[in-house]
Length: 140
Image (cartoon, rainbow, N blue to C red; front, side, top):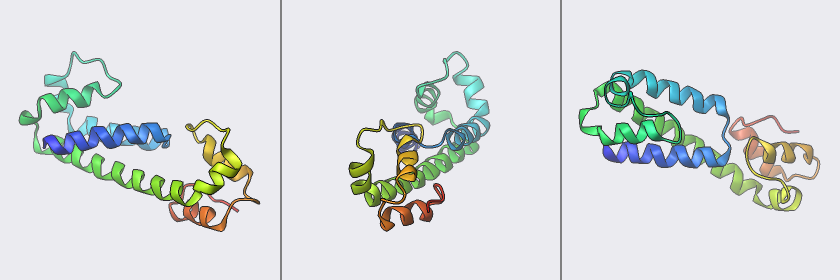
C-alpha cells in the first residue's frame, strides 16, 4: 500500500505541474475523500488540507487504511497515470509545434493548448491528431 500512496503522490504532483484540468483533479480528490472519509476524520482531522498534506497523513497511517480507502487511492493513482500518459503523448507529438509557435507561452491553465489552437493552421497533423486522440479539445 505504501507504494500505491507514494505513486499517487508522485503522479498527482506531476499532473498538477502539467496543468491538467482542475475539474478532473477535483473529481479524483472527491473520490479519495469519500473512500477515505473514515481515515481522514480519524487520523487526519487536524491536518490542514492542501499541498498533499492529507495524502501524506494517509501515507503515515497506511497500516490502518480500510479496503475502501486503499481502493480509492489505487483507483485515483491509476486514473492519474492515464492522464499523465495521455499528456506525455500529446507533448511528444506536439513538441516541435510548441517550440515553433508557443515557446514564449507560460505552461499551465491550458495556455499551451490555447496557443496550439490559435495556431492551428500552422500546427502539424501529428499534433492535431494527438489532441483528438485523447479528446483534449477539438482541433481543426
